[in-house]
Image (tube, rainbow, N blue to C red; front, side, top):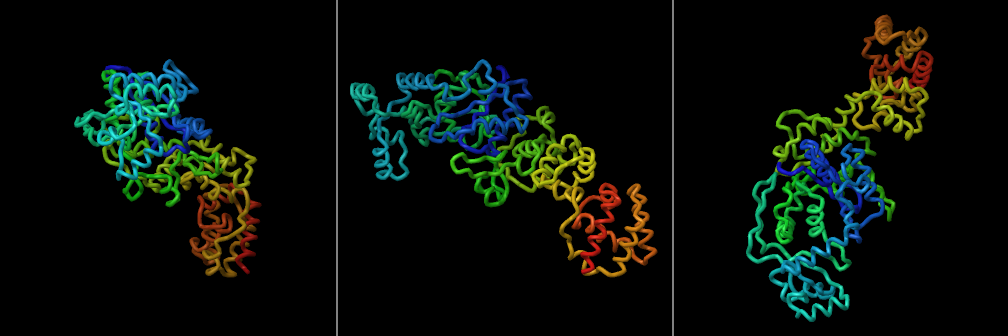
Amino acid sequence: MNKKVRVRFAPSPTGGLHLGGVRTALFNYLFAKKNNGTFVLRVEDTDQNRFVEGAEEYIVDCLNWCGITPDESPAQPGNYGPYRQSERKASYRKFAEQLISDGYAYYAFDTPEELDAKRKEIPNFQYGQATRMQMRNSLTLTISEVEDLLAAKTPHVIRIKIPEDEIVHFDDLIRGDVSFETAQVDDKVLLKADGMPTYHLAVVVDDKAMEISHAFRGEEWLPSAPIHILLWKYLGWEADMPQWAHLPLILKPDGHGKLSKRDGDRLGFPVYAMNWTDPKTGDVTKGFKEMGFLPEAFINMLALLGWNDGTDQELFNLAELEAKFDIDRISKAGAKFDFEKAKWYNHEWLKVQTVERLAPAVKAELKKAAIEVQDDAFLNTIIDLIKDRCTLLPDFVAQSGYFFAAPTEYDAASVKPKWTAEKASFFETYAENLDLRDAASAELNFKALAEEKGFKPGELMLPFRVMLVGGKFGPGVFDIAILIGVEETKARIAKAIAFFNI
């Protein structure tokens, strides 16, 4: 690498941040860290019709939650600002006009009505080599006609003039040599009627101004690549063009097509990093964070959608990803999204977290369930006891709620069919002589009394668990009894006996 590594994540502030966008940001971030480079956040807000209030702040919040904070951004400017395209508006027209004067672009004065008429006349109409000379533009009008239209401030756009019968080649860091026939490429708009650039012009001008060395983006942008390659060439900047890397798509779980928000809605999983609230409708689209994912698990899962380090290792923290990331290990093929696998990552990350790391999040989940924690040390003990049993953060409520309050419902079907007066008598006797100094001795006493009363201990363990927690779940039942204490254990046994005797 000859020049300093500078990469950018350039989202549009139009709504929720799709996990594919986060993965693009992550790969940019990892490549920058691996190569002692700079990770830039540039906000591509030139499409004023799709701009959504609050979306930029939401994107920043998502990146911060993931731990992939940019080195330069609108909030943390460096020497290459502004970092919002809308604030760079003046620079784009200059380059669009330069392209016109050099013969690589032209003014197009066609009205929306004229374009609609042409679409009806020509199936699959494209404004390009085959049709441009039938349209109202500076290629078909006289110089004086064009000057008059411009002087009258007639609405117009500027389009690139794609050359005929050329092959555009470029080297993609993931896909190798990629080529396009210009006959398949239409004359894209570069500057819109409102003076704002389209993505095609803005991305080239901004990458040049910000000295971007490598451009990571999704595979869906491949068809736009020849336009961008030509613009780098036509503007005289070919030597400064970034190296391209088109990332594989994240596919639907069945592997057919790109994963969309609709797929998540249909199949019951999030596709956004964090909750997104539509400011117009108030509709909330759920995110991985609010569903109970740890950022460590989310990032780990994303990194392995289309990349691996060549080993069987599946769990990576961010520092390991930074050290091991290698662009040569990115796959060309799309990666199927598997929500069960995503949950597996979260389960594995919950298991290895410290109690201190989990406590604030667990306390917040309990508070949502109207459970107030009075004793932090008590909560920490519970977290340590149950974290291996949780897949998502809300699971801590179901797995720990019974430590704070006696169950109000019981899994009667697992106990009542085999419930007898003799079992009721056993538990009454056990409660009278309850000794909970430690889990091991409590279990020995339980088993000794069971044998004395003519029971196999296994016949009584399940009813005892249901008495204390309400169902067939939770850690060791004697650990539970010790934590809730002698008096509470006795009270729960008595309450459950009365229920099972009915």
